Length: 586
Image (cartoon, rainbow, N blue to C red; front, side):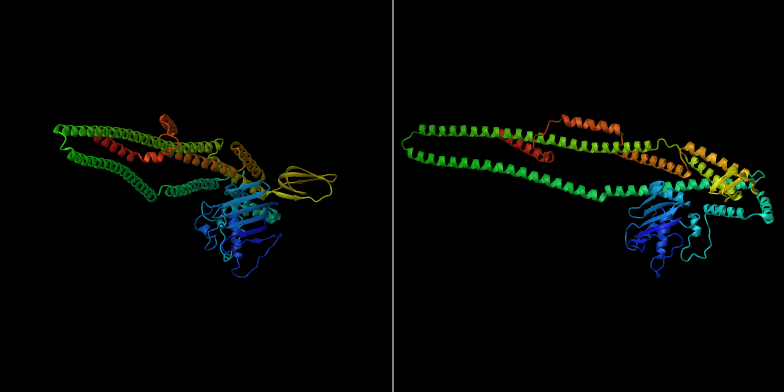
């Protein structure tokens, strides 16, 4: 692996963008004063390679500049195996990851898994990584103040380092010393392997214990991941619930609404009382005017009576007085009849107004219930559709945890077989000017180089043949173990429809996440439709039909204002009925 370019922004003390590169092959030295940020650059490089973008807690907050709530960002260009890759990661605010290379483009967790597979390291169940999780890279990573610390590499790093050392030892072994060493190693090997190269009881017991512990570790890691996800989901739902259902805010809104309604009702009652008093004033004024006219007429009659008293007889006086009383009685009767008819009309109008307000209240309440039920139905149907889509997205994924563990075990067995085969193989270099053909147990390594894991023959055209027979390690059993592991991996991978154990793990996680999302959506649907979506749909239909059956409101009528006026109109109707009854008694 060779680093070509590095860009850092908002990472601890490096707030402004810092770019380093392009870097040349070989040794590159970064120099600077104390506290210039050299160690920060090294930490940014380590975090970008080995820590997940979703890192949280104190480990994540320590990446941010002091006093800033921003997203630390690192971009790295590097080559690995002759191919160039570009890695981008952002932590904390707006966290994300992206890896681009010859194999394609990966985002988020897929980018993390592709990077882990490319560099061959492990990740902890949670929190930041350290040298134990960085594979063979942890052996080459020396930070400030750790030069003389003891090295405790992870198991994957031990296996890689052991394979390299075995290959080097196989190249230098030879002669009598090499034969003595091989015999000694064969004796030691016999303590753990049989003569046919198969594991002995001690090694089998150790392997069984390792597999058991690996299975238990995987189960614990899975349970821990599920628990973390459940805790995070619960925290998000609690925040949403607190924001949507704050009891103090709801109580304050309800109090203000009740106060407004009470004030409106008092206002309407006062308006009705004012109209009633105004009517009573008008009636009193009319009666007062009538009494004044009566008084004026009486004064005239008195004066006329005084003038005619000497000439009119008692009979004429009585007749005049009787005529006047009859006239006044007839006028009073006509006035009373008109007042009674006016009061009856006012009662009818008040009843119609009250009925109109009652219909407005019924329609308004029905429309409010219909809107709420329709909104709940839409959200429930949307949640059920989301659950259906989530389950459908992984319907064809049948991978179980046991399948992933089985494939990982086979890959580990294949790696050990490859290391054994590599340690005992013989490399042949042929630099000749004639064509060379190879037969037997020979595998090409490069131009003019072959790796022999058994007897092989090199035919030099026009010269002769060279027969090579490697010795030492039982290469036949090593090849058989490797071929058996390859065939087992091919069979399991074909059955699962994947290429590697990492692909199977990713498919299993997608399936588990989809089932969890579906269950959450179904809970949302149940919360909106407690009696079921079908029952809610029927209730919406019934409410709509009841509203449709109500008489249509007049154009321009404000239903809310008309409904709010119902108490005032009821009081007005009762007042008119009392006035009508009083006019009938008069």
